[in-house]
Length: 56
Image (cartoon, rainbow, N blue to C red):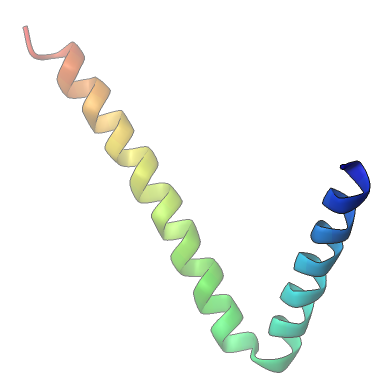
C-alpha cells in the first residue's frame, strides 16, 4: 500500500511539473483559484463561529 501511495504521489508531482512547464499562466491561475477557495472556506468557518458565539 505504501508503494502504491508513493507511485501516485510521484505521478501527481510529475503532472504538476509538466503543467507548469507547458502552461505556466494556467498553472498559476489554478493555484490562485485553489488558494482563493481555501481562504473563502476558512473565512466562512470563522463567520459561522462568530455568529454562533455572538447570537445571545
